[in-house]
Image 1 (cartoon, rainbow, N blue to C red):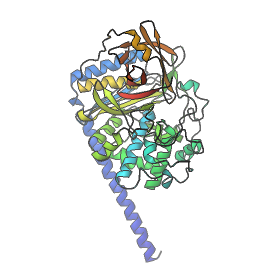
Image 2: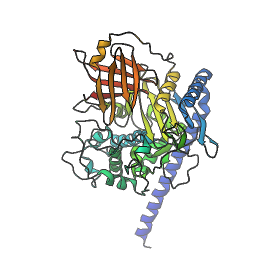
Image 3: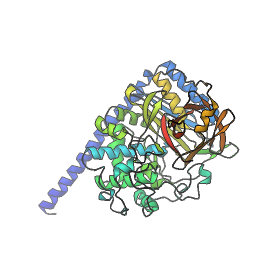
Image 4: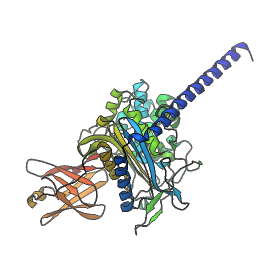
Length: 485
């Protein structure tokens, strides 16, 4: 070996050693931070802990959820987590705070944070055509930007069939994918890259997990690294999320939960099969309650991105048509919990229901991870956040209104493939939802609530009293449904 080659080789080895040393230092710092977080669990008062455990117990009894792990952030610190029920029913393995669950669409918040970190460092232009970073994605009639992809405004389609119930969605090779892909970004793009857009970008909200695969491709092009490796180095490690990893069905992953559903009789059964390797950026990560609590802490304390960047990420995007939409920023949903502003994201997938919620002004948050797709994590998360914030016990008081008001509300309201239809029966108002007729009760002339589950409706009306859209308040998240008839 000549001297020049030797020196170059020495330099490369030095750079590699330096990178390894830097990574080890960061890992050690994160491990220490994680240890401190566990040690700080005593900061959650005994009264709040008892209320949280009672709420979880009641929820499990009502929903028949096999296992739940939950976490709490208070005053910007991870203060508590625990597991309840069973991670594996067949082998009698209890759920613990360390149990790993499929995150489902919470993966989008992780991906968005990585994209915003790249933008913050000048490596990813959110408003350039995505082909600048992902040239394999074909040109469309209009340019598509990463900002539009992050806000579900890019016109990328969703699944071909309704995602829920999963037992009836296996005909779609994306919803019930059984193939494993080593290069998930490349494979995931092939599912939808040649399909036409469902709307001109920026004009209409169209929720799309597929669009986040394209964001993953943009992250790879902008960073020069594989998507999962970049997220691990720039989000997971700095946040101390050392358990979080892609949901690889071939890998031996300690503490991974088994995943469950319910059959038509209501009995708990094993969930439909899924290999999520083709959609990791939008729905393919595994994590634990402590790791997701650490993610909330890292976001609240500006350890991953600057406060100004976070504010941009959390600012709701508005399609030009203003029609049916989630109140959605860049990878994060927004809403309120009993009047307190919050941000977060939910996830639903074969064998899982998940929710993270953060109340930024209170520097508080909660995590709920459930190993069943038949239980609603968002409802429980909202209850837990109320307890953490010390809000008064919820209660909705029915009032008497003129039933003629209902004539302005009857009709169908829709956002993507989700629809609610309202009908009047004498002096009562009913919602037709997922094949069920459910009465709603007034607490003001425009605000109504369900008694069977924790959700509320606000009708947005014209001067004539006719509703043009409604706002669905559920689990701390607000969704606008446009009147379609």
